[in-house]
Image (cartoon, rainbow, N blue to C red; front, side, top):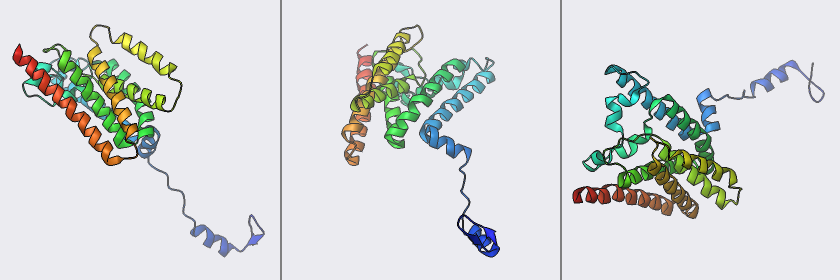
Length: 253
């Protein structure tokens, strides 16, 4: 007989009981990381890192240092240049949000994406979070398109990340949470946005678009069809502003 939690059991009974119990399945490292940080957040980080590697290799192939990845022909082909967007390079409005100038720029943006993205993905869900991120990136690009230097080259995920800050602020306001910490962080980042080489327009455009998108998500949270239509409408309005208004301005010049 074998001692059990209650009384005794015969060895055959113990073996049969153990055979009927399944061992717990442990998820892989990637799956566990996805559950902790968010699958979409990690995928966006991976895409940004991969693009940095591609531009670094491309820069090296033309004789530049890999750390000077902005010298890459691929970087130039994907960065936002308002005049080139007006002339038909429409993809630059979004591809620019996956480019970074140097390792420090990449590291700072990816750290912010990990911190704020994982929280918003947890609260909003994968697809709503992805919509918020992409629309914020587009909103920042539209601001640059309308008011930026027509021949300036711009790249970085900061437009989308500022949108995440705007979205997080709306969520905290809706839940009546203390906003002082977030407002302090925003004030610091807006101050940094005035430094040379930093796109204040892109940051503000992303911030406003992220806040508006989050408000729409909250207002339509119980009506999925209306929510999807509202998100599409935001995208259409941004694209009309990007291509319609800026093209008219170029033609007038």
